[in-house]
Length: 177
Image 1 (cartoon, rainbow, N blue to C red):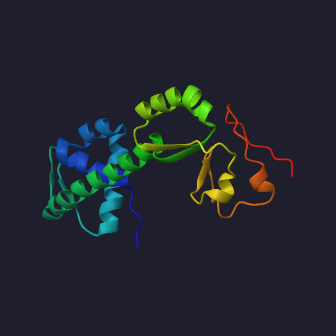
Image 2: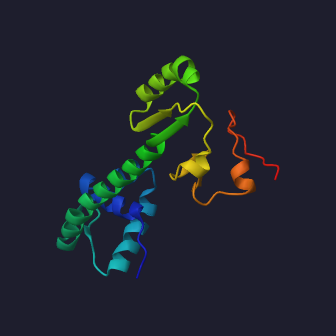
């Protein structure tokens, strides 16, 4: 099975939309000859011509029209999926559990949490004020996100469990076992 490039599909759509290899090449930021070669390779892999070409005009063949009609919405869906994934990466979401003493929760964390929630409405913040220290690795079974590293609370033990330290500058953690 041949591997196709999304850029080739975009090229077909651009030529179809603009009605010209030259105009499509300008839109895509490539040379006309590079675009022509990419389309020729795609047509060869597909085993069908997508365009009727003359020195003065370019038009879609019947197969080319069917290809454009099916590829266009598929590319929109692909780009929408990519945008959705990127948005999740850019926007924090999920649960954040903070265990603190009641005084610190009221006097220090309350205004910070409110501002945090304004900036990141997809995050649910649970502030727990039990009045005692809690071992989050033993008492909470959700995964812990730490500077891009995910650690399952149920599997962290030994030296790894003892080395979690917040680093304000996001520098790598160092642990003394």
